[in-house]
Image (tube, rainbow over all chains, first blue to last red; front, side):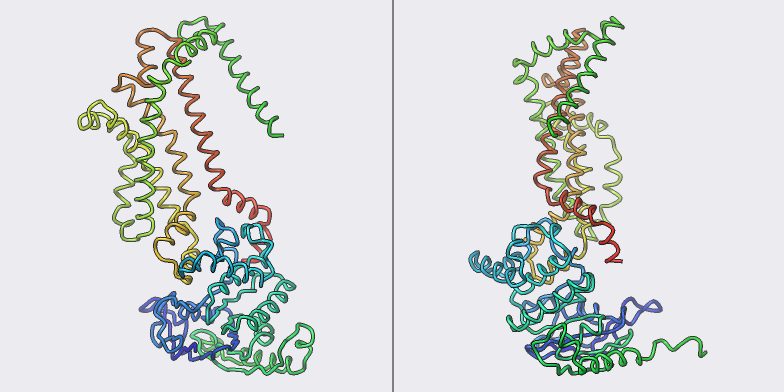
Length: 262
Length: 265
Protein backbone atom coordinates (compact mmCIF):
# COMPACT_ATOMS: atom_id res chain seq x y z
CA UNK A 1 0.00 0.00 0.00
CA UNK A 2 2.91 2.34 0.76
CA UNK A 3 5.71 2.03 -1.74
CA UNK A 4 9.08 3.58 -2.28
CA UNK A 5 10.89 2.70 -5.46
CA UNK A 6 14.44 3.81 -6.18
CA UNK A 7 13.94 6.89 -4.06
CA UNK A 8 16.95 9.19 -4.26
CA UNK A 9 17.41 12.54 -2.57
CA UNK A 10 20.28 14.93 -3.15
CA UNK A 11 20.51 18.16 -1.17
CA UNK A 12 22.18 21.13 -2.78
CA UNK A 13 23.91 21.07 -6.12
CA UNK A 14 27.34 21.08 -7.73
CA UNK A 15 30.29 20.35 -5.47
CA UNK A 16 28.22 21.03 -2.32
CA UNK A 17 25.71 18.34 -3.20
CA UNK A 18 25.04 15.83 -0.45
CA UNK A 19 23.37 12.59 -1.34
CA UNK A 20 21.15 11.83 1.64
CA UNK A 21 19.29 8.90 0.14
CA UNK A 22 21.00 6.73 -2.45
CA UNK A 23 18.49 4.21 -3.70
CA UNK A 24 15.66 3.28 -1.40
CA UNK A 25 13.11 0.64 -2.26
CA UNK A 26 10.71 -0.50 0.41
CA UNK A 27 7.06 -1.40 0.58
CA UNK A 28 4.64 -1.60 3.45
CA UNK A 29 1.55 -3.81 3.21
CA UNK A 30 -1.86 -2.83 4.49
CA UNK A 31 -2.15 -3.31 8.24
CA UNK A 32 1.53 -4.02 8.60
CA UNK A 33 3.78 -2.51 11.28
CA UNK A 34 7.14 -1.78 9.69
CA UNK A 35 10.07 -0.29 11.56
CA UNK A 36 12.94 1.47 9.88
CA UNK A 37 16.22 1.60 11.81
CA UNK A 38 19.52 3.07 10.88
CA UNK A 39 22.42 5.06 12.25
CA UNK A 40 21.76 8.71 12.96
CA UNK A 41 22.06 10.91 9.93
CA UNK A 42 21.18 8.10 7.57
CA UNK A 43 18.34 9.96 5.93
CA UNK A 44 15.47 8.47 7.90
CA UNK A 45 13.80 11.83 8.38
CA UNK A 46 14.37 12.75 4.77
CA UNK A 47 12.63 9.54 3.75
CA UNK A 48 9.64 10.40 5.94
CA UNK A 49 9.48 13.91 4.55
CA UNK A 50 9.27 12.47 1.05
CA UNK A 51 6.56 10.04 2.08
CA UNK A 52 4.61 12.76 3.86
CA UNK A 53 4.71 14.89 0.74
CA UNK A 54 6.66 17.66 2.47
CA UNK A 55 9.44 17.41 -0.11
CA UNK A 56 9.92 15.73 -3.47
CA UNK A 57 12.67 13.20 -4.09
CA UNK A 58 15.38 14.01 -6.61
CA UNK A 59 14.45 10.87 -8.48
CA UNK A 60 12.44 7.72 -7.94
CA UNK A 61 9.02 7.90 -6.42
CA UNK A 62 6.90 7.27 -3.37
CA UNK A 63 3.32 6.17 -3.74
CA UNK A 64 0.33 5.44 -1.57
CA UNK A 65 -2.23 2.95 -2.91
CA UNK A 66 -0.57 3.25 -6.29
CA UNK A 67 -0.91 7.02 -6.36
CA UNK A 68 2.26 9.02 -6.58
CA UNK A 69 2.78 11.22 -3.50
CA UNK A 70 3.13 14.82 -4.64
CA UNK A 71 1.76 16.69 -1.60
CA UNK A 72 0.63 15.61 1.85
CA UNK A 73 -1.83 12.75 1.23
CA UNK A 74 -5.20 12.87 2.92
CA UNK A 75 -4.97 9.32 4.21
CA UNK A 76 -1.69 9.76 6.00
CA UNK A 77 -0.76 11.16 9.39
CA UNK A 78 2.68 11.92 10.75
CA UNK A 79 3.83 12.01 14.38
CA UNK A 80 6.96 14.09 14.84
CA UNK A 81 9.77 13.46 17.28
CA UNK A 82 9.64 16.95 18.74
CA UNK A 83 6.33 16.71 20.57
CA UNK A 84 7.01 20.04 22.27
CA UNK A 85 6.99 21.81 18.93
CA UNK A 86 4.44 19.86 16.94
CA UNK A 87 1.48 20.74 19.15
CA UNK A 88 0.13 24.28 18.97
CA UNK A 89 0.71 25.90 22.39
CA UNK A 90 -2.16 28.35 21.91
CA UNK A 91 -4.69 25.55 21.63
CA UNK A 92 -6.02 23.19 24.24
CA UNK A 93 -5.59 19.45 23.79
CA UNK A 94 -9.12 19.32 22.38
CA UNK A 95 -8.46 22.04 19.81
CA UNK A 96 -5.10 20.52 18.82
CA UNK A 97 -6.69 17.18 18.08
CA UNK A 98 -9.69 18.77 16.43
CA UNK A 99 -8.03 21.14 14.01
CA UNK A 100 -7.14 18.58 11.30
CA UNK A 101 -10.76 17.40 11.46
CA UNK A 102 -12.01 20.91 10.76
CA UNK A 103 -9.77 20.93 7.71
CA UNK A 104 -11.38 17.66 6.65
CA UNK A 105 -14.79 19.31 6.85
CA UNK A 106 -16.31 17.03 9.48
CA UNK A 107 -19.41 18.18 11.35
CA UNK A 108 -19.06 19.49 14.90
CA UNK A 109 -20.70 16.39 16.35
CA UNK A 110 -18.39 14.05 14.43
CA UNK A 111 -15.39 16.07 15.46
CA UNK A 112 -16.31 15.99 19.12
CA UNK A 113 -16.89 12.26 19.16
CA UNK A 114 -13.64 11.52 17.31
CA UNK A 115 -11.65 13.80 19.60
CA UNK A 116 -13.12 12.25 22.71
CA UNK A 117 -12.66 8.72 21.40
CA UNK A 118 -9.01 9.12 20.45
CA UNK A 119 -7.95 11.25 23.39
CA UNK A 120 -9.68 8.68 25.59
CA UNK A 121 -7.81 5.89 23.78
CA UNK A 122 -4.48 7.44 24.73
CA UNK A 123 -5.69 7.85 28.31
CA UNK A 124 -5.96 11.63 28.46
CA UNK A 125 -9.73 12.15 28.68
CA UNK A 126 -9.16 14.23 31.81
CA UNK A 127 -6.81 16.61 30.03
CA UNK A 128 -8.99 17.65 27.08
CA UNK A 129 -9.16 21.26 28.20
CA UNK A 130 -5.56 21.62 29.29
CA UNK A 131 -2.82 23.17 27.21
CA UNK A 132 0.12 21.11 25.87
CA UNK A 133 2.63 22.96 28.04
CA UNK A 134 0.70 21.90 31.12
CA UNK A 135 1.46 18.27 30.27
CA UNK A 136 4.57 16.11 30.61
CA UNK A 137 6.55 15.13 27.53
CA UNK A 138 5.04 11.66 27.40
CA UNK A 139 1.54 13.08 27.68
CA UNK A 140 2.25 15.58 24.92
CA UNK A 141 3.36 12.79 22.63
CA UNK A 142 0.17 10.91 23.45
CA UNK A 143 -1.79 13.97 22.37
CA UNK A 144 0.14 13.99 19.10
CA UNK A 145 -0.75 10.31 18.63
CA UNK A 146 -4.42 11.06 19.38
CA UNK A 147 -4.34 13.85 16.82
CA UNK A 148 -2.93 11.49 14.22
CA UNK A 149 -5.53 8.82 15.03
CA UNK A 150 -8.47 11.23 14.99
CA UNK A 151 -7.42 12.14 11.46
CA UNK A 152 -8.37 8.52 10.60
CA UNK A 153 -5.36 7.81 8.41
CA UNK A 154 -4.73 4.58 6.58
CA UNK A 155 -1.04 5.04 7.17
CA UNK A 156 0.44 6.35 10.39
CA UNK A 157 4.06 7.43 10.10
CA UNK A 158 6.15 8.14 13.16
CA UNK A 159 9.52 9.86 13.20
CA UNK A 160 11.44 8.65 16.28
CA UNK A 161 8.39 9.54 18.36
CA UNK A 162 9.70 8.21 21.65
CA UNK A 163 13.32 9.32 21.35
CA UNK A 164 12.92 12.26 23.71
CA UNK A 165 11.09 10.67 26.63
CA UNK A 166 12.46 8.75 29.58
CA UNK A 167 12.79 4.96 29.51
CA UNK A 168 9.73 4.11 31.57
CA UNK A 169 7.47 6.48 29.64
CA UNK A 170 8.90 5.09 26.45
CA UNK A 171 7.96 1.53 27.37
CA UNK A 172 4.44 2.69 28.26
CA UNK A 173 4.09 4.55 24.98
CA UNK A 174 5.31 1.53 23.00
CA UNK A 175 2.65 -0.64 24.57
CA UNK A 176 0.03 2.06 24.06
CA UNK A 177 0.99 2.23 20.39
CA UNK A 178 0.72 -1.55 19.94
CA UNK A 179 -2.71 -1.52 21.56
CA UNK A 180 -3.88 1.32 19.37
CA UNK A 181 -2.46 -0.28 16.24
CA UNK A 182 -4.51 -3.42 16.97
CA UNK A 183 -7.61 -1.44 17.86
CA UNK A 184 -7.63 1.11 15.04
CA UNK A 185 -6.20 -1.19 12.34
CA UNK A 186 -3.83 1.30 10.78
CA UNK A 187 -0.71 0.65 8.78
CA UNK A 188 2.34 1.93 10.66
CA UNK A 189 5.72 3.02 9.40
CA UNK A 190 7.85 3.62 12.47
CA UNK A 191 11.28 5.21 12.23
CA UNK A 192 13.67 4.77 15.14
CA UNK A 193 17.36 4.49 15.91
CA UNK A 194 16.66 2.03 18.72
CA UNK A 195 17.14 -1.58 17.63
CA UNK A 196 15.28 -3.08 20.60
CA UNK A 197 12.33 -0.83 19.97
CA UNK A 198 12.17 -1.77 16.30
CA UNK A 199 12.17 -5.50 17.03
CA UNK A 200 9.71 -5.18 19.90
CA UNK A 201 7.17 -3.21 17.84
CA UNK A 202 7.47 -4.31 14.23
CA UNK A 203 6.27 -7.09 11.98
CA UNK A 204 9.30 -6.33 9.91
CA UNK A 205 12.43 -4.27 10.41
CA UNK A 206 14.13 -2.53 7.51
CA UNK A 207 17.74 -1.61 8.21
CA UNK A 208 19.04 1.47 6.44
CA UNK A 209 22.68 1.92 5.60
CA UNK A 210 24.60 5.08 6.29
CA UNK A 211 23.92 7.87 3.91
CA UNK A 212 23.56 7.78 0.93
CA UNK A 213 21.10 5.28 2.29
CA UNK A 214 19.50 2.19 0.90
CA UNK A 215 17.84 -0.76 2.61
CA UNK A 216 20.72 -3.01 3.63
CA UNK A 217 18.57 -5.74 5.13
CA UNK A 218 15.00 -6.61 5.97
CA UNK A 219 14.32 -8.76 9.00
CA UNK A 220 10.94 -10.40 9.49
CA UNK A 221 9.96 -10.34 13.16
CA UNK A 222 7.89 -13.44 13.83
CA UNK A 223 7.48 -12.85 17.53
CA UNK A 224 3.98 -13.71 18.77
CA UNK A 225 1.49 -10.97 19.54
CA UNK A 226 0.28 -9.50 21.81
CA UNK A 227 3.76 -8.57 22.87
CA UNK A 228 4.81 -7.75 26.37
CA UNK A 229 7.75 -5.74 27.69
CA UNK A 230 8.83 -8.57 30.00
CA UNK A 231 8.04 -11.86 28.26
CA UNK A 232 8.68 -10.74 24.68
CA UNK A 233 12.01 -9.22 25.54
CA UNK A 234 12.97 -12.36 27.49
CA UNK A 235 12.15 -14.55 24.47
CA UNK A 236 15.36 -16.06 22.97
CA UNK A 237 13.93 -15.27 19.54
CA UNK A 238 13.87 -11.59 20.51
CA UNK A 239 17.58 -11.55 21.25
CA UNK A 240 18.28 -13.51 18.06
CA UNK A 241 16.42 -10.95 16.02
CA UNK A 242 17.95 -7.95 17.71
CA UNK A 243 21.40 -9.48 17.18
CA UNK A 244 20.64 -9.92 13.49
CA UNK A 245 19.47 -6.32 13.14
CA UNK A 246 22.39 -5.01 15.16
CA UNK A 247 24.90 -7.02 13.15
CA UNK A 248 23.41 -5.73 9.95
CA UNK A 249 23.88 -2.15 11.17
CA UNK A 250 27.44 -2.82 12.40
CA UNK A 251 28.61 -4.73 9.32
CA UNK A 252 27.44 -1.98 7.08
CA UNK A 253 30.65 -0.62 5.53
CA UNK A 254 31.34 2.93 6.50
CA UNK A 255 31.01 5.32 3.66
CA UNK A 256 33.04 6.94 2.35
CA UNK A 257 35.88 4.42 2.53
CA UNK A 258 38.01 4.66 5.70
CA UNK A 259 40.65 7.33 5.41
CA UNK A 260 43.34 5.28 7.21
CA UNK A 261 43.67 2.83 4.36
CA UNK A 262 44.76 5.41 1.89
CA UNK B 1 -0.82 39.86 48.39
CA UNK B 2 -2.02 41.60 45.26
CA UNK B 3 -3.60 44.45 47.19
CA UNK B 4 -0.44 45.03 49.13
CA UNK B 5 1.40 45.53 45.86
CA UNK B 6 -1.19 48.05 44.69
CA UNK B 7 -1.00 49.90 48.02
CA UNK B 8 2.78 50.04 47.78
CA UNK B 9 2.50 51.56 44.29
CA UNK B 10 0.01 54.15 45.55
CA UNK B 11 2.38 55.01 48.38
CA UNK B 12 5.29 55.45 45.98
CA UNK B 13 3.19 57.74 43.83
CA UNK B 14 2.28 59.68 46.98
CA UNK B 15 5.98 60.21 47.70
CA UNK B 16 6.40 61.59 44.16
CA UNK B 17 3.54 64.07 44.70
CA UNK B 18 5.02 65.08 48.04
CA UNK B 19 8.38 65.80 46.37
CA UNK B 20 6.63 67.90 43.72
CA UNK B 21 4.86 69.86 46.44
CA UNK B 22 8.12 70.38 48.37
CA UNK B 23 9.90 71.50 45.18
CA UNK B 24 7.07 73.92 44.34
CA UNK B 25 7.21 75.41 47.85
CA UNK B 26 10.99 75.64 47.85
CA UNK B 27 11.28 77.23 44.39
CA UNK B 28 8.21 79.43 44.81
CA UNK B 29 8.21 79.79 41.03
CA UNK B 30 5.32 80.65 38.76
CA UNK B 31 6.45 77.89 36.43
CA UNK B 32 5.87 75.17 38.99
CA UNK B 33 2.59 75.92 40.76
CA UNK B 34 1.78 74.12 44.03
CA UNK B 35 -0.16 70.89 43.69
CA UNK B 36 -3.30 72.37 45.16
CA UNK B 37 -3.60 74.84 42.31
CA UNK B 38 -2.89 72.21 39.71
CA UNK B 39 -5.55 69.95 41.19
CA UNK B 40 -8.03 72.82 41.32
CA UNK B 41 -7.35 73.65 37.68
CA UNK B 42 -7.63 69.96 36.84
CA UNK B 43 -11.00 69.73 38.57
CA UNK B 44 -12.26 72.91 36.90
CA UNK B 45 -11.25 71.79 33.45
CA UNK B 46 -11.70 68.08 33.41
CA UNK B 47 -14.67 67.50 35.73
CA UNK B 48 -16.31 67.37 33.32
CA UNK B 49 -16.39 70.31 31.00
CA UNK B 50 -13.37 69.57 28.83
CA UNK B 51 -13.81 65.83 28.83
CA UNK B 52 -16.14 66.21 25.86
CA UNK B 53 -14.51 69.18 24.19
CA UNK B 54 -10.86 68.08 24.46
CA UNK B 55 -10.21 64.64 25.97
CA UNK B 56 -12.69 62.68 23.88
CA UNK B 57 -11.62 64.25 20.55
CA UNK B 58 -7.98 63.57 21.42
CA UNK B 59 -8.62 59.94 22.25
CA UNK B 60 -10.82 59.60 19.17
CA UNK B 61 -8.06 60.82 16.84
CA UNK B 62 -5.56 58.62 18.52
CA UNK B 63 -7.81 55.58 18.32
CA UNK B 64 -8.54 56.16 14.64
CA UNK B 65 -4.86 56.54 13.72
CA UNK B 66 -3.84 53.61 15.87
CA UNK B 67 -6.54 51.33 14.50
CA UNK B 68 -5.59 52.22 10.95
CA UNK B 69 -1.92 51.52 11.71
CA UNK B 70 -2.79 48.21 13.36
CA UNK B 71 -4.90 47.06 10.41
CA UNK B 72 -2.33 48.08 7.80
CA UNK B 73 0.68 47.00 9.87
CA UNK B 74 -0.61 43.55 10.76
CA UNK B 75 -2.08 42.97 7.31
CA UNK B 76 1.02 44.02 5.40
CA UNK B 77 3.27 42.37 7.98
CA UNK B 78 1.58 39.00 7.52
CA UNK B 79 1.96 39.31 3.77
CA UNK B 80 5.59 40.42 3.87
CA UNK B 81 6.51 37.94 6.58
CA UNK B 82 5.14 34.91 4.79
CA UNK B 83 6.44 35.76 1.35
CA UNK B 84 10.14 35.69 0.66
CA UNK B 85 9.95 37.67 -2.57
CA UNK B 86 7.83 40.45 -1.10
CA UNK B 87 10.15 40.60 1.90
CA UNK B 88 13.27 40.99 -0.22
CA UNK B 89 11.61 43.66 -2.33
CA UNK B 90 10.16 45.75 0.47
CA UNK B 91 12.92 45.25 3.04
CA UNK B 92 15.19 48.23 2.23
CA UNK B 93 12.20 50.53 1.66
CA UNK B 94 10.55 49.78 4.99
CA UNK B 95 13.87 50.09 6.78
CA UNK B 96 14.28 53.57 5.30
CA UNK B 97 10.72 54.74 5.82
CA UNK B 98 10.69 53.74 9.46
CA UNK B 99 13.82 55.84 10.02
CA UNK B 100 11.98 59.04 9.08
CA UNK B 101 10.73 60.78 12.24
CA UNK B 102 6.95 60.98 11.75
CA UNK B 103 6.63 64.66 12.87
CA UNK B 104 8.74 65.54 9.83
CA UNK B 105 5.74 64.57 7.77
CA UNK B 106 3.48 67.11 9.50
CA UNK B 107 4.02 69.91 6.95
CA UNK B 108 3.30 67.49 4.12
CA UNK B 109 0.22 66.14 5.94
CA UNK B 110 -1.13 69.66 6.49
CA UNK B 111 -0.61 70.45 2.84
CA UNK B 112 -2.50 67.39 1.68
CA UNK B 113 -5.11 66.92 4.37
CA UNK B 114 -5.53 70.42 5.76
CA UNK B 115 -5.95 70.95 9.47
CA UNK B 116 -8.76 68.51 10.18
CA UNK B 117 -9.14 65.04 11.54
CA UNK B 118 -7.64 63.21 8.57
CA UNK B 119 -4.31 65.04 8.92
CA UNK B 120 -3.95 63.95 12.53
CA UNK B 121 -5.08 60.41 11.82
CA UNK B 122 -2.57 60.21 8.99
CA UNK B 123 0.34 61.40 11.11
CA UNK B 124 -0.54 59.10 14.01
CA UNK B 125 -1.02 56.13 11.67
CA UNK B 126 2.21 56.67 9.76
CA UNK B 127 4.16 56.83 13.00
CA UNK B 128 2.51 53.79 14.54
CA UNK B 129 2.56 51.52 11.54
CA UNK B 130 6.30 50.71 11.53
CA UNK B 131 6.73 48.99 14.89
CA UNK B 132 3.57 47.00 14.22
CA UNK B 133 4.61 46.08 10.69
CA UNK B 134 8.18 45.13 11.51
CA UNK B 135 7.23 43.14 14.58
CA UNK B 136 4.55 41.28 12.63
CA UNK B 137 7.10 40.41 9.95
CA UNK B 138 9.51 39.17 12.63
CA UNK B 139 6.73 37.26 14.35
CA UNK B 140 5.76 35.44 11.17
CA UNK B 141 9.36 34.69 10.19
CA UNK B 142 10.43 33.69 13.66
CA UNK B 143 7.61 31.21 14.16
CA UNK B 144 8.73 27.62 14.54
CA UNK B 145 8.81 26.07 11.04
CA UNK B 146 7.47 22.91 12.62
CA UNK B 147 4.06 24.57 13.04
CA UNK B 148 3.93 25.07 9.30
CA UNK B 149 4.89 21.45 8.63
CA UNK B 150 2.17 20.21 10.94
CA UNK B 151 -0.32 22.46 9.17
CA UNK B 152 0.78 21.05 5.81
CA UNK B 153 0.73 17.40 6.89
CA UNK B 154 -2.81 17.84 8.19
CA UNK B 155 -3.81 19.72 5.06
CA UNK B 156 -5.12 22.90 6.64
CA UNK B 157 -6.35 25.24 3.93
CA UNK B 158 -4.62 28.60 3.59
CA UNK B 159 -7.37 30.46 5.41
CA UNK B 160 -7.32 28.36 8.55
CA UNK B 161 -3.55 28.13 8.37
CA UNK B 162 -3.43 31.92 8.52
CA UNK B 163 -6.09 32.27 11.18
CA UNK B 164 -5.25 29.36 13.44
CA UNK B 165 -1.52 28.90 12.93
CA UNK B 166 0.32 31.88 11.43
CA UNK B 167 -1.43 34.64 13.36
CA UNK B 168 -1.42 32.94 16.78
CA UNK B 169 2.23 31.97 16.35
CA UNK B 170 3.14 35.57 15.55
CA UNK B 171 0.78 37.07 18.13
CA UNK B 172 3.29 37.55 20.96
CA UNK B 173 5.59 39.50 18.66
CA UNK B 174 2.68 41.45 17.15
CA UNK B 175 1.69 42.46 20.68
CA UNK B 176 5.19 43.86 21.25
CA UNK B 177 4.75 46.10 18.22
CA UNK B 178 1.24 47.14 19.19
CA UNK B 179 2.41 48.12 22.63
CA UNK B 180 5.35 50.14 21.34
CA UNK B 181 3.02 51.95 18.97
CA UNK B 182 0.59 52.85 21.71
CA UNK B 183 2.98 55.37 23.23
CA UNK B 184 3.94 56.64 19.78
CA UNK B 185 0.25 57.27 19.08
CA UNK B 186 -0.04 59.36 22.24
CA UNK B 187 3.04 61.41 21.38
CA UNK B 188 1.92 62.08 17.81
CA UNK B 189 -1.57 62.96 18.97
CA UNK B 190 -0.15 65.67 21.23
CA UNK B 191 2.27 66.97 18.58
CA UNK B 192 -0.33 67.11 15.83
CA UNK B 193 -2.72 68.94 18.15
CA UNK B 194 -0.06 71.44 19.15
CA UNK B 195 0.74 72.20 15.53
CA UNK B 196 -2.72 72.48 14.07
CA UNK B 197 -5.89 72.12 16.07
CA UNK B 198 -8.67 74.04 17.77
CA UNK B 199 -9.28 71.52 20.51
CA UNK B 200 -7.74 68.46 22.12
CA UNK B 201 -5.29 67.96 24.96
CA UNK B 202 -2.22 69.02 23.00
CA UNK B 203 -3.97 72.21 21.95
CA UNK B 204 -5.13 72.78 25.55
CA UNK B 205 -1.63 72.46 27.02
CA UNK B 206 -0.05 74.78 24.45
CA UNK B 207 -2.87 77.31 24.68
CA UNK B 208 -2.64 77.39 28.49
CA UNK B 209 1.09 78.03 28.29
CA UNK B 210 0.62 80.84 25.75
CA UNK B 211 -1.92 82.56 27.98
CA UNK B 212 0.20 82.08 31.13
CA UNK B 213 -2.32 79.75 32.77
CA UNK B 214 0.43 77.52 34.08
CA UNK B 215 -1.83 75.67 36.50
CA UNK B 216 -4.02 74.74 33.50
CA UNK B 217 -0.95 73.71 31.54
CA UNK B 218 0.12 71.37 34.31
CA UNK B 219 -3.44 70.08 34.64
CA UNK B 220 -3.38 69.20 30.94
CA UNK B 221 -0.04 67.43 31.29
CA UNK B 222 -1.44 65.54 34.27
CA UNK B 223 -4.44 64.50 32.18
CA UNK B 224 -2.16 63.28 29.38
CA UNK B 225 -0.24 61.22 31.89
CA UNK B 226 -3.46 59.70 33.15
CA UNK B 227 -4.64 58.92 29.60
CA UNK B 228 -1.32 57.28 28.72
CA UNK B 229 -1.24 55.28 31.92
CA UNK B 230 -4.84 54.12 31.53
CA UNK B 231 -4.41 53.11 27.87
CA UNK B 232 -1.33 51.11 28.73
CA UNK B 233 -3.13 49.40 31.61
CA UNK B 234 -6.04 48.47 29.34
CA UNK B 235 -3.60 47.15 26.74
CA UNK B 236 -1.70 45.04 29.24
CA UNK B 237 -4.93 43.61 30.66
CA UNK B 238 -6.11 42.69 27.16
CA UNK B 239 -2.76 41.16 26.27
CA UNK B 240 -2.79 39.03 29.40
CA UNK B 241 -6.14 37.61 28.44
CA UNK B 242 -5.41 36.98 24.78
CA UNK B 243 -1.85 35.72 25.26
CA UNK B 244 -2.44 33.78 28.47
CA UNK B 245 -1.11 30.69 26.67
CA UNK B 246 2.18 32.41 25.93
CA UNK B 247 2.76 33.43 29.53
CA UNK B 248 1.82 29.97 30.69
CA UNK B 249 4.09 28.30 28.18
CA UNK B 250 7.04 30.49 29.11
CA UNK B 251 6.50 29.88 32.79
CA UNK B 252 6.32 26.13 32.11
CA UNK B 253 9.49 26.07 30.01
CA UNK B 254 11.36 28.21 32.55
CA UNK B 255 10.40 25.78 35.28
CA UNK B 256 11.68 22.79 33.35
CA UNK B 257 14.32 24.51 31.25
CA UNK B 258 17.22 22.26 32.17
CA UNK B 259 15.74 18.80 31.61
CA UNK B 260 14.02 19.99 28.42
CA UNK B 261 17.29 21.29 27.03
CA UNK B 262 19.16 18.16 28.00
CA UNK B 263 16.66 15.98 26.20
CA UNK B 264 16.57 17.91 22.97
CA UNK B 265 20.34 18.30 22.76
